[in-house]
Length: 109
Image (spheres, rainbow, N blue to C red):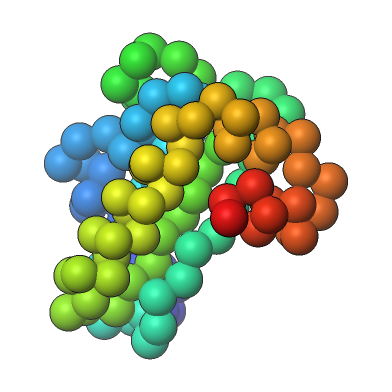
């Protein structure tokens, strides 16, 4: 399926090096012909996810980036913007306590 094809791209990227960037955040991503338009999904765990991270800390928040093949600039721009925002403790705290999708969006603006 398209989902399986995309997830294989994410797994292949993760095999190149961890996408757990520290501070309890992972930003797995993949480009695939199975993706028709770029998208980002956010997930949060009350517990810790076991993920090989750069700082050795467990992951609590995951941003999954999907990009179509050939969307190199868009993919990298989304990745760098997210990483820059997530360096701020205030943003991470807002995301951890967000009560709704609107709260998540507001935390990222």
